Length: 208
Image 1 (spheres, rainbow, N blue to C red):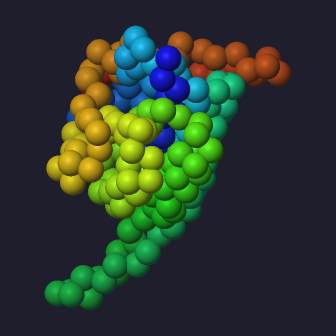
Image 2: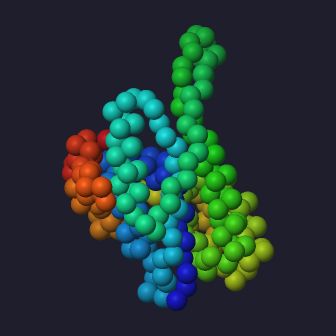
């Protein structure tokens, strides 16, 4: 059996689902999703999820916290954090200053983990859920240093990169059925007895 580690670019996946209007799939069990992407000759060794904590607006931050707590109930999944910061953007025409959120470090964190795992021989196949072309260099280096290892890109809905597709051994887009089959139950009981509820805004309708 081929050992597989799945690396998930959290914001890339989230915004792909958001662009589709697929709120119902925000409540994803990412270990189950990664398992559903495997071939029969493969076994899932670990899932690594990369994201950044948001603080505003408060209701969205609370939904993210609930989701991360749900993910933390999965023993085989580890969460890696980058930074989420707000930068000022000035309009050249009117001088109006807008605040624009910007996520930092996710691509670097993914690159570090993929390279380290390759050197440690932790995987035979790496599945990367992202369409971030900043990871092309990482993929090329792993394939050059470890030609026996395979890098597969699983593009989130509404996300695609020709450059990533060309750099990897293989690629595909995650379909709706895989998402539907990979959801958490509406309620999750943690080890301490606390019950996590699917956020009400992540309902079963296909709206943004």
